[in-house]
Image 1 (cartoon, rainbow, N blue to C red):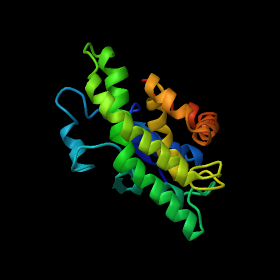
Image 2: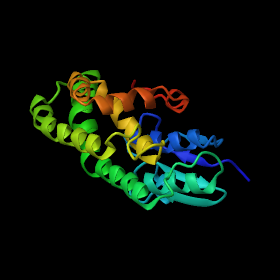
Image 3: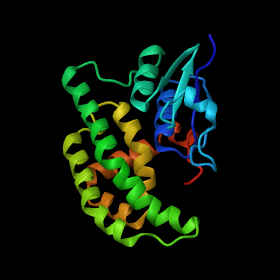
Length: 213
């Protein structure tokens, strides 16, 4: 059976989440670079893989998927290796809740409103939108506080073991911590800080390092 192929850009938060799942499961895979922000947008033929032109997309032995959550759950369930989803319903619900919080509230705030404006804007030759950053900080703190409360005393976001929730969160926190605001806000949450040190030390994080780090 051929190795799965992941389509997307190595800098992408969501591509990295999918790669982390593959790495943690120790699945051999290929990454085919697709840059949706390139001049002219995504290649026309890519829309056959993802009709909305987003990344990542995925293919395994003729089976195609898009949407990161669908990809990472498939990877966990289709391949041998460490289980990345809790078997117990309460913990699985917590994992899904954390992923939903990240997708619906944290991603745009931590990555686009703060990281992109503070870090990427100067590298692209424009001034950061300070008003956008300031406006995003209360929402960022709400996101961190919610994650800390959901994690409770557990070493991982959904309990005692590493799950897809941790792999979903880590790429966002990488970028958020690259800003002074993110570094300071995260330091206010000791539990999240311990979590960050644990996830950052994993080999999967090293092997999927973003070119923007």
